[in-house]
Picture 1 (cartoon, protein in one colour):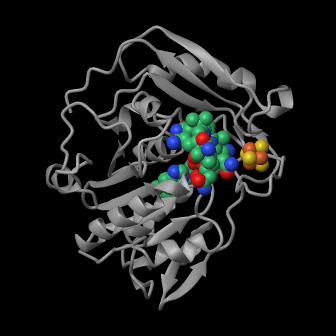
Picture 2 (picture 1 turned 180 degrees about the vertical axis):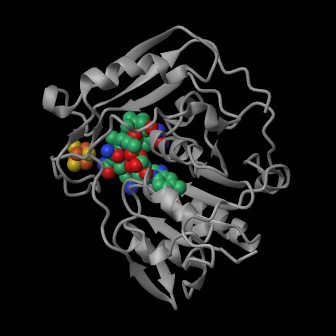
Amino acid sequence: MANTKLDCRQGQDFHLDEEGANRKPRKRRRLRVIIPAYPAFNVYSRIARTTTALGPVSVATSVQEMEGWDVEVIDENNYQRSAPRNEAGLPDHEALQKSRPADVVGFYGGLSSTILRVYELARFYKERGVSTLAGGQHFIEENIPEALRNGIDVVVKGEAEETIKELLYAFEGRLPREEIKGIAYLDNDQVIQTKERELLRDFNHLPLPDFSLVRYAKIRIFPVGRVRGCGMDCEFCTVKGKPRYATPNVYWPKLPLYTRPLEPGIFSLLTIFSARIGWKLCGSAISCAITRSGSRNDSN
Ligand code: B12
Ligand code: SF4
């Protein structure tokens, strides 16, 4: 079988093989998306045990549609049930790899405080021959080369619902890596940044985030987001651009379906309002959470 590792420095593994772009995947593969543990107990630690992060679940949901790929999310801050742990009480990735080996691992870099944990795990997986990806708001400017020199094979810049699919095609050897927009990788120790990817504008056709992909988690608060981007331009913030909205009359009716793959439960809607409608909160946090009673009947 062709060597299709994403960390290939010369890029030769990303060229089409003799069967060309229409080649079918030869075996089922697995992507594990990891939401890294906070470095220390904090005011969010307790609530984190009842919720998860929307971005990585959205990325995983995109992959779920791909032929030949299985996907799971491990949220280290909501890691419960019969989940294997190491002596430090953290998720035991050795055991996870033994029971369900991942071919590619993707890390959520939404919070800079968790990045050392990302690098620790990236090195762990790379030592075992697993390809590593990362995405999220932390990865801008000098943080990108830093990640690439700390165990991350490919950094995805910005929204990843489309990019992740192309990257996994590259992993299969069906697409040259250099043709994928919105990524960065090392080539002979040089940082290569491909062309910028266009921002997503049509949210109506994105699949609903599938929270049942978050293994070992107990989720009672489901994050939802109708807005991407923010025009407030606060100097310390990495969220830029004009706000882009999903169409309300398409988006809101879908919300009750959020808990669909899980047990039915009673849910209510909580909303964090934005600065634009009067509350002094982050402008892009026009986000909501659906809370539900009961919990997932999870035997895994
Ligand atoms: C909602 C929100 C919250 C909520 C919920 C957080 C949650 N767990 O869901 C609450 C209110 C709890 C919160 C709290 C905090 N937040 Co907050 N929050 C946000 C906000 C507004 C939206 C996040 C979101 O859901 N976005 C929508 C999803 C779809 O986008 P996304 O996460 O970026 O994901 C996309 C890409 O990044 C990429 N991607 C994401 N994951 C992965 C994984 C892989 C493998 C790949 C390839 C790609 C990829 O693809 C995704 C889909 O396109 C962001 C700002 C923003 N607009 O993003 C800040 C933001 C994430 N928060 C921020 C901060 C600082 C905090 C706090 C530390 C604030 C504080 N001082 O208390 C706390 C920390 C909480 C905690 N311990 O988790 C910063 C993080 C900056 C940083 N570099 O660390 C942000 C970026 C805002 C900012 N000012 O810059 N937050
Ligand atoms: S309002 Fe929030 S998301 Fe918007 S620029 Fe300021 S900190 Fe960033």
